[in-house]
Image (cartoon, rainbow, N blue to C red; front, side):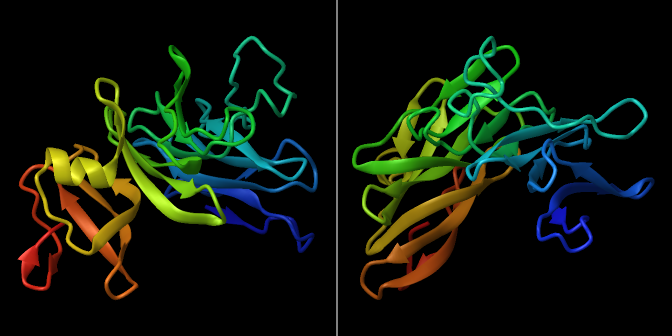
Length: 239
């Protein structure tokens, strides 16, 4: 989350809150530049989001101190031994964190060829790749143990059409629409999934939105990877 903690200076700071300490201002590395929190792990010990400095939103990770306060945010670095002030070594905005706080995922940008990515202290940055005819990639969510990652890519031109993805360490990067039809055996009909931005901690359910190509309307969906039940469309079970 974020709030204007600056007294009206037109920038915002990431915040964290709990019942004991209330709202805590997580601050910024640079006076007059905004930060935002996008996700938090299971016990609140790791908060992730972005730090603004020179225009692009770059990765930010806050870790909780033993006294309950949070240390200043750190960048996720493409090369851990490289320059932490180099924007081409700073990963893009963080968007997801595993339950134990060990894994973080985020948005691609010019630092890593616009690929969605995940990171842990042990592995370093893992770029998830690109799907054909896609632009920038975004991690939407991950399971509690980061064994399944979902997200989407913008299209090459003006961001459309969006392409959803599912990634696992063993199967790698896959188009979620292809996964739904080929792996799960579902007939999507006129529906096309565009974005996957939620996944349950156990990896059973994926949620997001898509487009009905017959009516040009959008729809929300929930995909059950266990029993493949979900949205009923025109009397036929699809997602």
